[in-house]
Length: 250
Image (cartoon, rainbow, N blue to C red; front, side, top):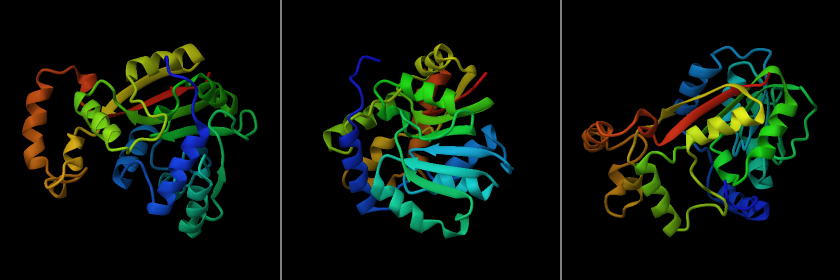
C-alpha cells in the first residue's frame, strides 16, 4: 500500500453530504443477509458486534435482528444522527456513535466480531485498523469485511468512470483480496480466507439513457451471457466485483 494516510476531514465531509441526500447502505439487505448466513450464522444471540462504518445503520439493524448486541460506529456525525432515528425497534440492542476505525473507543477484548461493510477500501494504510481490531476482539473473535475487488476488471472500469464523475470519496481504492489476506496474516490474524461475490457489470448503471434498465438487480438478461463469456477466461478470484474476507484473533 503506497498511498498516504486517510484524509479524515475529507471523508467526514463526503459522508455528511451523503447523509443529507439519502439513507445510505453500501449493499442491499439480501447481500448482507447472505454474507451473514455464510460467515456468522442466523442466531447471533449473546454476540457483541461492532459495525465499523455503519452508515445509516442498515447492517447494524440486520445484525440486531439476529439477536446481536451491536455498536454502530461511523466517521460521519450526520449519518450517525440519521441511524439513531431509523431503528427504534432495536433501541435496546444498538448503540450508535461517531468513531474512527483507527482509534476505537472500546475496551480490550470486549467484542466478538469486528464487521466492515465496504469500509476498508477507504483506508490507504490499514495496519492500524487491523491492530485496533486485534485489541478489541476477544480471543477467537472474528474479523469480517466486504470490499471491492480490484481483480475484477468490470469493477475497475466502474471505479474509473465513478472517479471521472466525482462520485468517489477522497481515499477510495479497490483492494486485491490476496493482498489483504496476506495483510491479515502479517497483522496476526489466523485462518484468513476470502470468497468473491456480486458478479456484475456495474458501470452500465452509470451510463445515461441506458442506466434505467441496469442496477444491482436489473439487466441480467443482457449481463449474464457477457459474464459467462468473460468468466471462461478469468481466474475464480476475478469473477466478483466484491469479496468477503475474514480472519480470527488468536
